[in-house]
Image (cartoon, rainbow, N blue to C red; front, side, top):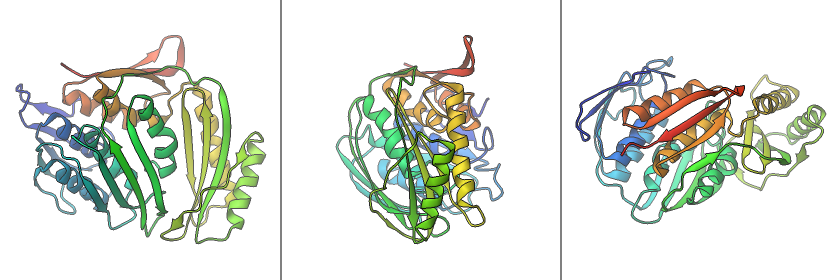
Length: 351
């Protein structure tokens, strides 16, 4: 996938076509992260051209403004609906930052954009992001806390994460807080899951009848008798919403699968979807699930390299890989000759 047309000089402006790959916000977020980390300016065009409403939505604009503030970037085109953007980064700075999306846009995706830079900041930072914490088409706060960040901590990162308030569609009004103490990351080699230690489930309810959670968990245990029910820690909610969170803790990795309740979808259907997603993860046998796979590429790049096994690459993973290659990284996605259901992902930062 060729998504960049760059000049040969290392500091030259990169021209990136946002319509390539998954055609959504992934190209924007990864490009902003790598621009900050490499001090290389980028020009993005056709931003989110593959979406029904192209251009910058509130969540994407917050990503741009947050990145710009953290590195003092000069930005052109940072307005709602813009399909073109120029981003000229300055030095990454530590600080106490708060960003409000102003909608149910994903707090996790804003965090995904700026966390790599704050891992390289000159001092400790605190970050608060207000918006959606359990919303469609984005990793939920539970995934960040229990699946993504433990891998980073295993690579040497020092990150504290707190969910301050749940935020659901359509209102949002949730909030997360993250503290980052920059440390050099170690390369990752994640090849096996290891033994399953525990399978747990929790049903998160915001301003809805508690019977919804009871029905979801009862039905989930009918599909997965081995699952243990956990009571989620008491956290407030900015609005009505529901999420069923299934957490599979293995010796080497933790997979978190979140199924969101929605109007017209029964509790039984939510539980059935959660069980099906878990069985699909088990089926390929690799340690890294679909959503964790694309999020690990940038940490591997920061660490200088690494590798892991996953299932068949998603379009998000392929898109992320293409953006890293545009910035000079070596990213290889290759099927495992010994197991057709598994793929190797290898990342090496260019010298």
